[in-house]
Image (cartoon, rainbow, N blue to C red; front, side):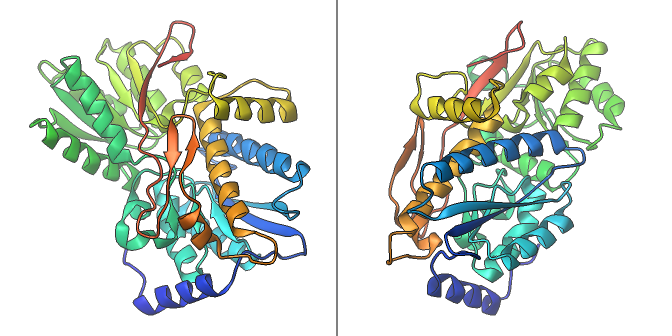
Length: 377
């Protein structure tokens, strides 16, 4: 994707610097979110939306941001980048002061130029690569999660530590998968390794049989890095196990979900995930306890998840920035507020933005699924 002309960027930044957080109606601060509420990733999008709502509602019940109420505006993009870009513009037209949690590398890539031109920050993207991670494009992107490169580096470190050094990379046949493939190259170089194979998997896993046949022919294969969305992840691993391929699969944190566990069913053995947030079941961690308390009080449910934990922390970061921005009569632009709010700790995950650095956390953990279908770190 080409970068925006410098004139557009300058105009966007002029808008950003000139105007502090304001609202469409007195007392309201509008937050815009484009996410997949229907389509192949609808379950994740709906789960994320539920957490956004309960947290922002809890902030409003406690008095809002210096008396200003949060107003969440959401649009469905169906994981379609073109829709994501259109939604970003629509939300900006509704006077959103921030775009929150773009969903997936392709959608974030589509939304960031729109946000940049308007001078509106894009906070807490569910994406580990793409434009959100490019320094030249990053002035309006505020990343909270660690990068895909950091995730895969942790995978390879873990694999080498336990003696797995004959590793194949299977990546989804799109920009998300390709960014993961590039990150894997960097991780392998550190250990003077080369992938045993690099194979593309269709988003619907339609070519899974061909991929599995190739994997089974690789001599001495003892690890597979899989960079794919839930549908392809579930299908490829399940079909692999049915054919007798027992090699361990390492997956990105985005697939560490109850939906993937349920989809895998009896085929969870030897499936490993990275994690980017604290364990959502460890209530001894303050931010985890806050997430559990807010979510349970609003829904009556205890179906906590890594995704829910991530969305909650992203929302906390945004609200902390808004609190720093909305200060009585001396409001400052949200981008400036995020850049100057200082170090914030959310359990083992810490975030510290500066004008030159919008990479929030570097935290990456490793989890497996136990015999009861629970994640264990």
